Length: 551
Image 1 (tube, rainbow, N blue to C red):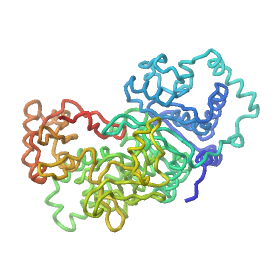
Image 2: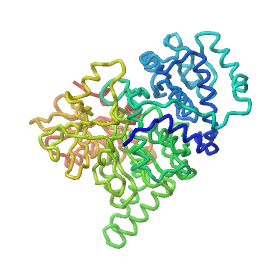
Image 3: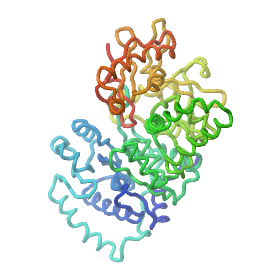
Image 4: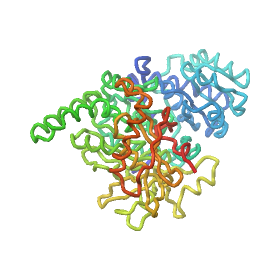
């Protein structure tokens, strides 16, 4: 794989797709590539006049929207280092992250800005409202004057209009810092992952060559994952911008209803999602039909007809035009995965981490193995820290072009993240088969030691629990020498079915014998506790496990 400048990929794409749609707010404004390029140039001028230098940090904190893409690309193509921050973080966290990365500029939603204070972020020179690009705060009066005079200045610079020939971005180097992405993770506090242009290009190259080669400048994509997280940023935005595709941002919190409506209107060519989305569709729409047709599905020919009907209905629900659905970011429910595999639904499960920008393994849906998350991507190697990697789970370790260079201003965490011979320690456990396919077994930090020294992976127990009615999600924890299952019930559906209060509690606690019948003797659940509200989650929608651990 020969490295190519990522910023030059953007430059070429803008020129080749000048009049094509680039970024849209779902059911709102659409910016063509020429509009994006023009807004980027406006921002480049202000960056320069405000004294922003190559390598300075530019923070972005807002919901998904077209201008988020504009501001991110403006920072990167200027030579600054964009720092995406999840807009759902609390004000104190945002203050801390802006200060930690020493950002000079902050692009932010006005709603988020209401809870922030410039006094708490002394490094900032200017704060810009994301959707209007107007200044919300500037450290000096001359900075506001620059913004006010920008339209006339731009007109003087380009009296005949800004054209594709005026687009020119600096050529980045492979080992140059491209961005810092903060991740809270499920087992600790936020760390700033430093990703190089080499790591970004490794993912872009793999997406265009192997994962999504059918994607073109005419492709449509729905962006529903947080753009502040590498999974959504890379495969619902960055890659698409290099090929001239059209990205539709879901600007509100995407409920399953909004997502399915968007799919039916936009008919995306590829779908990038977390398992939770497809699991909800399966549980609410398919499982009741499957349960009603169990008898008929045992009859050979009728079984094929019913399965085909399920498959076609599901494909239509997701827009009907996609080549495959790529799932990642969290564990996939085995029951759902097995069913979708059985009906030949075009989905695949990948594996990645922020530290790998993010992809580590992947396989096309028709090459994927049940229960696996694929094989290493181009330029990436994995190994299992185990005496027998094919049968005994061990930590998954990675090295390659996609791997980050360390945590920003955290040498101790960086040193802990790598082995002595330079492999990145993922903290995930897995095995790898003779064909090179990776099978995840859980997180090493989540592993619970059984009564006789057995390794208990709570994710495997949770997959069993989550199959029961009225269970939205669960978390198995070690509790005074035993195992407790924390369960967040589907209160809304239970109420619709006339089940409330103590009746719902009794119903779910009554699952305990059935759950324990499906798990090993050393991993029996001792008790069930109901959660009054949903678990706190990371950007990937994984549960923040460390918040619920007991001593």
